Image (cartoon, rainbow over all chains, first blue to last red; front, side, top):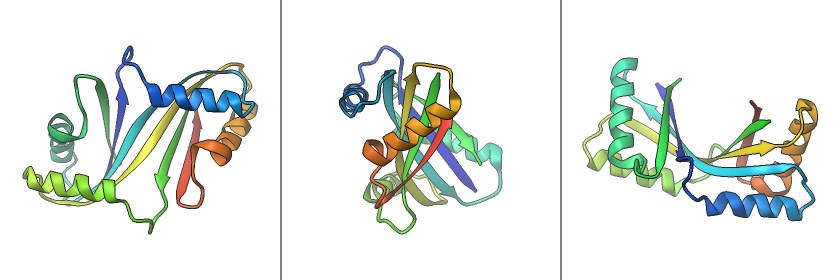
Length: 79
Length: 79
């Protein structure tokens, strides 16, 4: 079973990587880019067929390891 | 207009970050994680309402700056 976790900085948390990308896009001549935020995407290949169990396990993985929940939000999607 | 770009390593390209996550999940007791790949997600806030123009601009941004097309794939989604 494939799953996908998106990890993004919470709103209000400063995102220097995003700002750097925004600045670089401006320097390359791309106008109209008002904001850029960068996050992570983690794709997992899980054993088993139980979607509910997979979602529960993924939530625990996010809380324990994948995301820093002080400054990051996560979204889980079992594909 | 919001847009989202997913950037992932091409199949076959070694992903040490993903392997590190997989190993750490195993050490934390999460069994059945057969593979992990890590990528980036970039969320952009663009001026204007022209979806086709935005998609064309995003494609150019990916080719020129956001993705390293030798080793990375990108997926564009205008939201």
